[in-house]
Image (cartoon, rainbow, N blue to C red; front, side, top):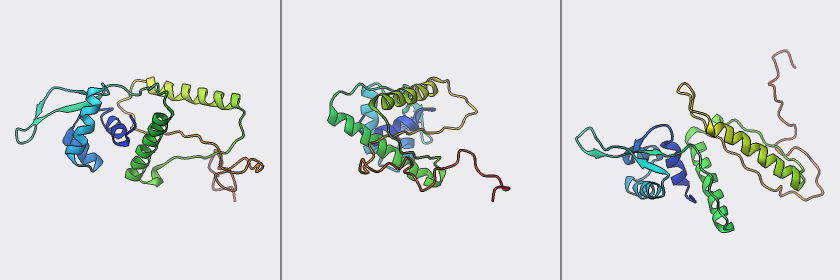
Length: 180
C-alpha cells in the first residue's frame, strides 16, 4: 500500500462502485495506468469487481468497490513503513490540492511528551479513529477525510515554547462580534 494513487482509488470506491474510466477521470490520470493499480488492488483483496454492466455505447464496464472502510496493515520492515507513511501523506496532499487548502479544518500543536504520554496519545487517537471507522455510513452524511500526523519537533531541545503553529494558539471558540 505504499502507493498514493492506490490509497486514493480506495477512497474513491469507498461509498460507491466506479469503473476504471470513472476512477481515472476523477484522478486526472491515464486509464491504462489506473487499471494497473486497480488490478493490483483487486488481486490483494482491497477492491472487489462488481457485476459487469453495459456503458453508453454498449461497451463492457466493470465497476469496482472498496472492500473495507479501513485496513490495518502489520508492516514490520522500517523501509516499508516509511514508504507507506509517504504514500498516505502524498494521497492527503493530492486530495487537499483537489479541494483547495481553504476547505481544510486544521490545528497544530507543539507539546512535550514522555514516551508513556506519547503512547497514551497514540492509543486514544487510534481508539477515536477506530470508533468512527466502525460506524455505519449515514446516507445523509457528507464524505470527509481525516488525516493525523505526529512527528518529532525539529527545534533544539532547549526551546520550551509550547505552541508551534503561530504566536498565539487558536481559540477553540470563535470570538463574538462583541469581543473587540
